Length: 82
Image 1: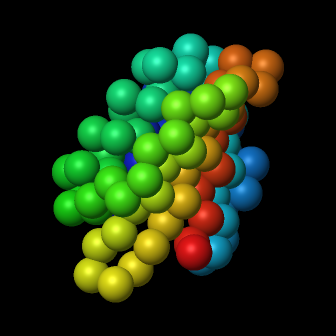
Image 2: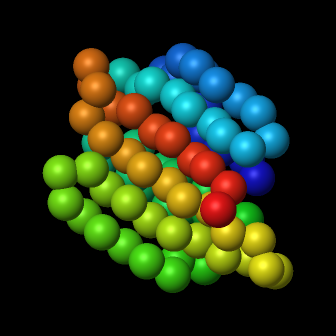
C-alpha cells in the first residue's frame, strides 16, 4: 500500500504489525489522504467511528487492518493488523 508519508510526516514505527506516524497537517486532511490510499489499495471499510479519535476497520482478501487518526501535536496515525 502506498501510504501518504511524503507529505510532512515523521514515521515513528514501521513493522509488519504496526505503523505509526505524526503529521503537520490537520486531522481532516490526513484522514482524506489515508482513506484515498486504502481505497486505491482495494481495502473496504467495515467500521467507521468518528468520535474524539477517528477509528476505521478495513478488510481485503481476509486480511484486516485498524486505522486510528487522532490529535497529537498536529495529527497522529496508527495502523495495526487485527
